[in-house]
Image (cartoon, rainbow, N blue to C red; front, side, top):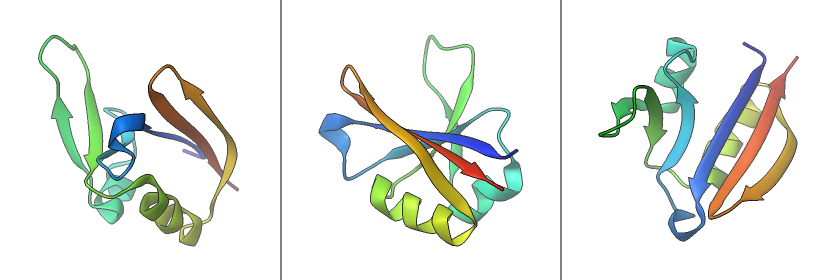
Length: 84
């Protein structure tokens, strides 16, 4: 899976950080220390870490991921990363 989206709420920019969905690579999620959780009312799960996005981005860079783009969507910050 060469693409990865991570995000956080602007008011929570020190964490937690959403690092994957229910179809994400379990091995990568384990390396990041992510836990899968579901929010009441959602029919899907997401992986979260308690780290700030900067810490997650540093970890992903060491694994070969590079930021392709970053944007703000409402009160959410989103990064798209790619690994060759």
